[in-house]
Structures are given as C-alpha cells and as structure tokens.
Amino acid sequence: MKLTPQVHRIGNDIVAAYLVVTDDGITVVDAGLAGHWRDLEHELAAIGRTLDDIRGVVLTHGDTDHIGFAERLRLQTGVPVYIHGADAARALGTQRYKPAPGSAGGMRPGPLARFLAYSLRKQGWRTSYLTDVVPVADGDVLDLPGSPRIIGLPGHSPGSVAVHVPGVKALFVGDALTTRNVLSGRTGLQPSPFTDDPAQALETLDRLTRLTDVEWVLPGHGTPWNGQVSEVAASVRAGA
Picture (tube, rainbow, N blue to C red):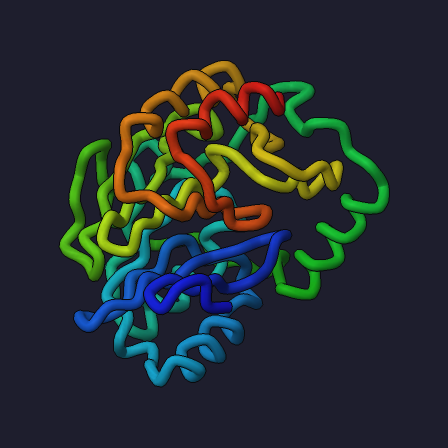
C-alpha cells in the first residue's frame, strides 16, 4: 500500500511493516509476521524493485509480531538487521517480554478473534528469531536509505524506539503508541497493549514533540496518523 511515493505499508491496521523507498535503495522498518514475506514481494514487484534493492531492516523493538520475516530476509540477502541493544535479546529469542498486569487495555471477543485469526493466517506461529543483529542506540543515524535516526522510547519494551526519516517526513513508532488497540478494537491515539512499563511509555513520548519534518506517524498497529507530531504525547495520554 503506497502512502507516499517513498513510504509504503505492508500488512494492514492489525499488523504493519513499512518500506522507505529511495533512489539509493530501500530500508525496511519492522518485519511484521512471517507470512508478510509474500506481501513484501508483492509490494516490491508493484514498484519495480526486488529484494536486492533492500539495504537493511530497522526494528522498532523485538516482539514477535515485528521481527516476522527479518531473519529470512537477512539469510537470503545478507542485509543487516538493526535493533536497540536493550531489545536485542528479545529479537534473538533469549529473553521473553513481561507486560505489566492490566496493560492489555480491555480485551473484547470480536477484535481479539480477528487479531488471532489474522496472526494465524500470516503464520505468526512460525516466526523465526534472529541469529544475528546489529545493536543501535538513541541518537544513531544509520547508513541506510533515508538516513533513519533512532529515537529511544523505552516503555513498551526496554529497547523500544521510533525511527525518524526526515527526508520522507515519516516517523515510525512501532508499539510506542497505537491508533487501534488490536485486542479491544478501540481506535484513536492511545497506548499500545501489552506494554512492559506503561508509565514510562507515556513519559518518553515527550521526546517526539520536538521533532520537525514529520507528516506521517506510522504505528505497528492501526491506521497511519497524519497530524501535528507536537500533539502526539498529549493525545496518547488523553486516550490512556
């Protein structure tokens, strides 16, 4: 799905990953579920590109619905997979996450069933953990198409980050926030479910208010949000 000529979404409002497309190649932000591999191939074909045009993968955190096809892509093409050092163990499968009690946000049978059905259809059960990652830290600017900059947003997980790509006016936020709670069906800017430290996740969003060159805020779950990034932190808190 083309959001702009340089930003494409793989997946849907339930689980999403993104492509940053430039003349120098493609940066993949998050890797969805294992079954999104076919979506990746279809999206590349639609824009006249191939897997060989991908230069790297940047993960916003290490949860299984964000690392889906990353290992397959790494093994097949040799591209590096970047993740904050504090979440490397999650992506490698050596450390499980422990969401805070009550952080699911009020599950409802219908939305939960749709999330589980979609996860099964996209082979969430066969996600492969990474066997090699490149650790990054807050403030790093990566040598990838679009020159993505890492913004540390611990809370959802210790190494949760946003990925800011000023050249395409996009901010990829992973699960630092959501515009659709996949467990309750509630829409609008709000905290993501299954967050390790909900209070910290809300506090660190203030780091986004200073950003410029952002027209799109792109979550891992929910619709892309097109508004003032300076309003994000307050809106998410209001939706908590």
